[in-house]
Length: 178
Image 1 (cartoon, rainbow, N blue to C red):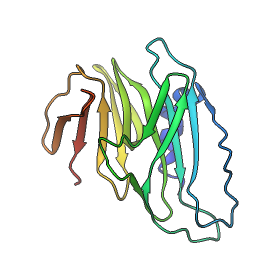
Image 2: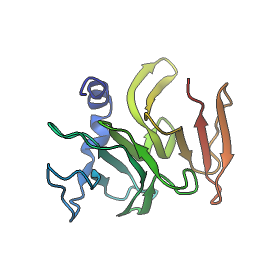
Image 3: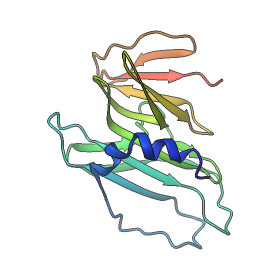
Image 4: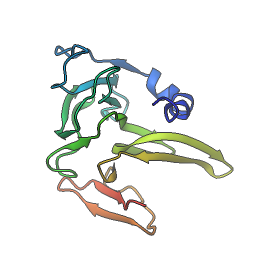
């Protein structure tokens, strides 16, 4: 369970430490099989007043089999504004959280010169190269890999990638599964 998290903890540690945990009032007891386990981490508002942070979702509990969750959606009030993960315009009905799956969904993540408004994929690692950096994400097990960027962001076309506009003008980039 932890091996995929090692590159994330190394390459995105600086982004995570800028955030603070938001303690939800509804804590989940270890024996609870009904409620979704989640922990948001939110940064103070940045200069662009963009909601920034990570939503950690966990559908694993030691010595307990948790069922697949469907329709999962979390709305957060952050210093940069309200954010719903996943964006209901991009994934109506919420996401599916597979049995034993753990996710860290970013929002307001600065990647190079761009801001990733939110992703329905987990940052895996950052590969630095002479041209800057390449960001690698891993898809969730049950959802399309989706990335939302602010309107006006340049997105280069690629095989297996579709780009569409959401009602608010932001760009939805969807990667086809392998």
